Amino acid sequence: MVNSDATPAQFSAAGPEGPAAIEVAHLIKLYKTTRAVDDISFRIARGSVTGLLGGNGAGKTTTIATIMGLVLPTSGRVQVLGHAMPEQSAEVLGRMNFESPYVDMPMRLTVRQNLTIFGRLYAVRNLAERIEQLAADLDLKDFLDRANGKLSAGQKTRVALAKALINQPELLLLDEPTASLDPDTADWVRQHLRNYRKTHDATILLASHNMLEVERLCDRVIIMKRGRIEDDDSPGQIMVRYNRTTLEDVFLDVARGRVAEGAP
Amino acid sequence: MSETVTHYGISWHRISAMVLRYWYLLMSSWPRLLELIYWPALQIITWGFLQNYIAQNDNFFARAGGTLIGAVILWDILFRGQLGFSISFLEEMWARNLGNLMMSPLKPIEFLISLMIMSLIRLAIGVIPMTLLALFFFDFNFFAIGLPLIAFFCNLIFTSWAIGIFVSGLVLRNGLGAESIVWTLMFGLMPLACVYYPVSVLPDWLQWIAWTLPPTYVFEGMRALLINQTFRSDLMVWSLAINVVLLIASFAIFLALLRSAKRVGSLLGGGE
Image 1 (tube, rainbow over the protein chains, first blue to last red):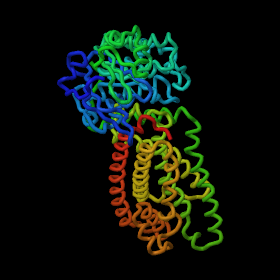
Image 2: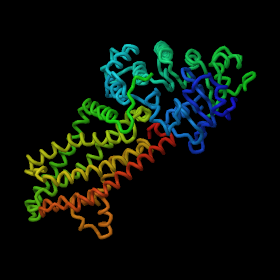
Image 3: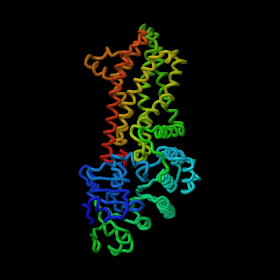
C-alpha cells in the first residue's frame, strides 16, 4: 500500500513534477461510523490526466466531491489551483468544472438555454460564440434547440461535457464520464478530452470503472480500495508491477486482495 | 486560460442567470403557469361569495365590507410568496441540478436573491388576476387600500422569504423527504397569524405567541384600515422589526444547514 503519511513536500514522489493543480493531504471523511476516505494524500501536477480507480464504495466519488467542495472533510487538507477548499472556493470555482452522473442538466430547458445559463454563471466572455464553438466541437448543432429531456443518453453526455467545458476550465473533474455510453460514443468523448487537455494544457482528474478508458487516457492511476490508496503510478508501471497486461486484471487483483510483486 | 470574467462580491450577472433559468422553465410549461393562477382564482371566488352571503345576513360584515376578501388576498401574498420561493428551489432538487449550481461560482446569497425575485414574479402572475377577479365579481378594489398596501405587501413578502429560506435549508439538508414541509409549514402559522379574525379572540397566552409573528400585525392592520379607516403605522414598524430578525436568522440557519449538508454528503444525492 502507498504510504499515505506523506507531507505535501513529499507528494512529488507519488506523482509527476511541476506545480500542483490538486493537493490532498491526510484526507479523512467519515459518514457516521463509515470511513469513506481513510487518510489519503496525493498531489496532481498541472496538465496531467489522472485516473481514480476503484470498486463501488472505494471512496472515489467522495474524494472528488471533497475536491470540488461539495463534501466537507472530517480532517485533512485539500488545495485546488493553489487555494484551500472549501474556504477559498470563490477563488477557484470559476476556473474549474465537472461532470458527474449524480447531477443532471434541467430537462425542460433546451441545450442552448442550459448552456446560456451556465455560461452566464461562469461569466463566459462572448457566450453566444462559445456555445456555437462547443456545438461544433461536440456535434451538438442538430439538437441545440431541443429540450435536454428529449435527448438520448449519448447526446446528454455530450451536453454535460459541453457544460463542463463552457468556461474552458483549467481543472476538469469527471466522475464516470463515459458511463452508459456505447463504445463508439465513449471513444469519441475520450478523444475530445485528449484534445482538450492538449490544446488547453488542462488538468483532468477522472473517476472510472472503465479500465480501458483509464489505460488509454491517463498518465497516472491512483487505485483506491475501502477509502485508502492501494497503488499510485503510471498505468504501464502498475501493470508491470502486478505482472499483468491490462489494468482490468490489475483491478481484479487489487479487488481480490492479490498483492503485486514489489508493491510498496 | 479560462475565457471568463471574475465577479467578486454579489454578482447581478449570476443572479440574472438564475432568474433566466426559472423564467425559461416557467415559459416552457403551461401547467406551471396555469397552476400559478388556478388556486388563487379559486380561493377568491369561494371566499368572495361567502363574504357576500355573510354580509347579507350580518350587520358587522356589511359594515366591514371586504375584510374577508382582503384577508384572502393578503394571505395568498404570504403563502404564494413562500411557495414561489420554495418551488423554484425544489425545481433544482427535482432536476438534480443542485450539484451543478453548488459547484459553480454562484454564491448562496445570490441563489437566495434569485429565488426572491422569482417569488415576486410568480406572485405577480398569480395574485394580479386574483385582485382583478375581486374587483369584477365582488366590487372589491384591493388597490384602493392605497399606500398602506405597500407596507402590508413588504411585510408579508419578507415573512414569506424568511420561511422560504428556512424550509429550503431543511430540504437541502434532509433531501426531498422533507418536501412536504414546503407545502404545509405556512398553514401551521395560519391560526396564530389571525388571518380571518382579530387577535383578541385568542386566549391570552396564545396572543403572546401570535404577536411574535409579523403577519399578525399585517392582518390586524388591514382590519383596522377596512373597519375603522385607520392606518396603524406602529403595527407595520413592529412587523418590519420582527421580519428583519427572522430574515437574518433564516439566512444563518440556511448557511448552517448547507454546511451540514456538505458534512453528511447530501448534496451529492438530494434524494429521499
